[in-house]
Length: 145
Image 1 (tube, rainbow, N blue to C red):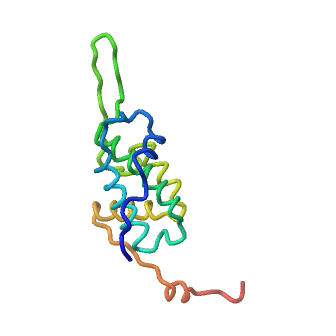
Image 2 (image 1 turned 90 degrees about the vertical axis):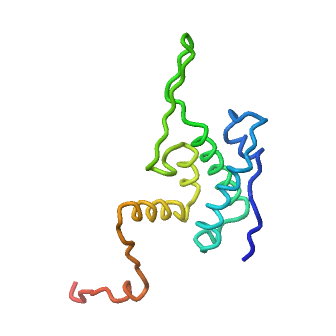
Image 3 (image 1 turned 45 degrees about the vertical axis):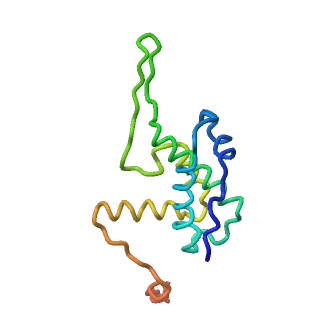
């Protein structure tokens, strides 16, 4: 399977986040989102039933997420002394922004949620338990019930 390149455009991302200035180059954010969509949703088959339009939406929301994380999330502003403070979370991945949360919501197959679980397991040293059809097929059943 050949990578077709990004599914989304800067215009689609700006529809999601109109606060992005027109002179902001979104290329690196779009490419980051595309790498995530391509590797975690498309090439592994998790999003096999997703249309190109669906993938473009996921990529656009992820692009806005990456851009906001890099720009910083303003948690307070003041006009008199002209100060701002930013919050940067490092452990909750896509849950950090409303854009990442929306991407997870639109990912109805749970590909991104699975990735988040894999990342959390790797950070905590947990090993992922693989469940296969063989295991599911060997469940004990009580015929007397």
